[in-house]
Structures are given as C-alpha cells and as structure tokens.
Amino acid sequence: MGRSPCCEKAHTNKGAWTKEEDDRLIAYIRAHGEGCWRSLPKSAGLLRCGKSCRLRWINYLRPDLKRGNFTDEEDELIIKLHSLLGNKWSLIAARLPGRTDNEIKNYWNTHIRRKLLSRGIDPATHRSVNEPPLETTISFTDVKEEKVKIKDEKIPVQERSPDLNLELRISPPYQDHDESDPFKTEAKISPCFFCNLGLQNTKDCSCSHSGIITNGTSNKNINPGYDFLGLKITGSVDYISSEMKNQDMCMKL
DNA sequence: AAAATCTCCAACCGCCGGAGA
DNA sequence: ATCTCCGGCGGTTGGAGATTT
Image (tube, rainbow, N blue to C red; front, side, top):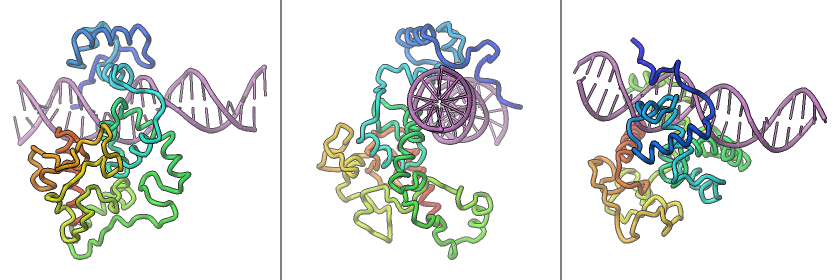
C-alpha cells in the first residue's frame, strides 16, 4: 500500500519556474501567507506540486534571502558548523541568516570541499588527509558484545557515521576537561557557540557574556540550562539534544 | 569556431517523523 | 496501535553557462 503522490503529477509543471509562476506564488503568499503547501498551488492558480512551490519559495523567492557570494566569515562558520553537525544543512542554515540549506549544501559541495582538500583536510572528517582513518570503534571490548556485533554487521565502519567526528568536542564544558563526565557541564559560565568560534559580540552571539543561556526545555539529561549552539530554544534544540544523546550512547557502547 | 569537458545550482526525488484520525 | 497525510530534509540530477582543448 504505497503512499499517494503528493499531488496530481499528470497536471503539474516541472523544471525551471517562469517569471509568471514566480509572480503568482509571491503574490499568493503575500496575500495569504505560507499556509498549506498541498492546497496552495490550486489556490494560487499554479500547475505545480506543493512541494515544488515550497522549495521555490524557501530557496529562491523568500524576501529575506541574502543571495550573492559567501563571505570568508560565512565560509569558516560553515566549516566549523559542519565539523560539529555533519550534513545537517538545515541546522547549519539556521545559523546563517539569509542562507538556505540548499544553498549551503551546494556551496559546500562546489567550493568548500575543494577548499578543505586544498588545505589537506578531508571534508568528510575534518581531519588531515594524511592522518590514518579515524577509528570510530572506541573499544567495544568491555561492553555488551552482542549489541556491538549487531551494529557492526549492519553498518560497515566507514559508513557507520562518516560525519561523526568523535574527536571534536561540541561544547565549552569540555574545556574544563572532566574526563569522568564529558557532559558534566553547566554551572560553569558557558559562552554561546559563537563565542567559542571567536565571534563574540557579533549579531549571532546570543549570550550576554555575563551568564548562561537559560534553556527552558526539558533537556534535563544533557546540559541543562545550556544551549550549546547558542540557538534560540526551539524544537531543533531537542533534536540536537537527542542526537547528542545518541552519540553519547554510541560512545558508551 | 566548434567540440569536449567542467562547474554550478535550481529543482526533483524519496525517505522520515510528527500529527491527527 | 495503525494508518494516512503533510512538511521537511538530505542526496542526487539535469542542464545552462563557462572554460578548455
């Protein structure tokens, strides 16, 4: 029982958008806002699939898009965020106002990868290409063997998590280097992520340099009271937290 | 000048997770 | 608990334009 198509494909246009289509979409969204994408094409008089409309709006027509070349600062920020988040383009884009995930993804694939390679850095791992491959097997010897076996059978080492660089430390807390509990965190004055990137006092810097960002969500297990990306408290934080939990779990395995 | 190759990026595709029935 | 719908995401592709041969 497959899913129904997202729209009636027989009657939809594909490929590049025309000026008229753009105008219609812009006019409709200006008048009605971003509502139900599925029904939008019909309401707006567009022969497009809702997904296509959404993509066109988000990646190209939105008025707050910056467009134009990436600055060196943006380059470096993308590299740093990628080293922490991997190919989570939407999360990376969330930290670059006016940039879209698609744009950043394209830019990464066309420019930054090359840039890193020319520096002798493997863009997938952010490690020197001369270094031996990172052993992601943290020593599974003294843990539940069976569980580990299952994991290893399913996913070859290379594929297991190519973007997960376990050498990287995500959060300031680790500066205190408490080996016994790498996530023992808070309490210390925790600058925001941008401070840790050396971007203090930029518009992205969300900490007041006098205290901790209060995390009002329920991330009780990890870094309570600390939003390691300096993100506003949104659902994505929970996502990140859960990812971190997963990573933590993997490390513990 | 023409053909071949490369680069870039807009757009598509398929999958996933959350929400609601 | 299960199913369907929908929005969102990341990977990939197609083709236009640029560059090289």
